[in-house]
Image (tube, rainbow, N blue to C red; front, top):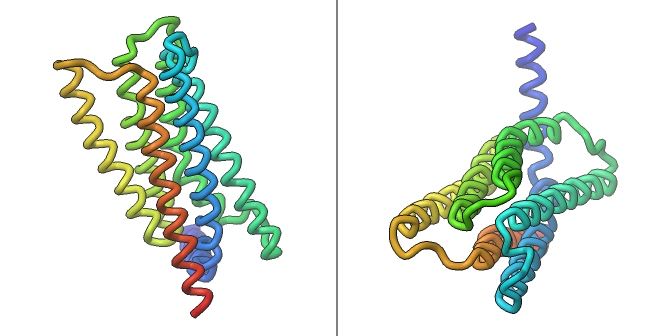
Length: 218
């Protein structure tokens, strides 16, 4: 039994090493898609809150449900891009490496979903309580990326660390403001989500796109 597990594990590592270039090419469109979606969602929530003080998106419950929906769309879009890449390379979509990556990110994603639902279920929440969600989500997402990075290129682990560090800094900021002047209106949290998730993904996607392009030209 142990020998079969070791053989399977070595096969997964060998396959991942062989497909590292493929994963790198697939990551650029995924990051660009996720970044664009995050920026658009953040800009929509922020501008609507600026123009309308009665905006539903600035309500604590709608804020949570709105970003949970954006996250689900982003995950679905990422898997569709992976599927397209697999079909283009004549490879199975739900391969063993894909299952390993999915199992690595799943715990943190499930915890993030539960945290969001717990915050959204009560009929009324203090906006200050909702301000804790962006850094918590960023921290969990960073942990998910770091776990997936053991089956993908090294840059994903560093990208996960970036999310975790940004989340820690923002947690300190929210904690200090909680005992002082308080947090800004909740529609500013849309800007934080858009800048954090959208901006970081978009920057990393542009980096991957141009470095891969230079690599192919060389």
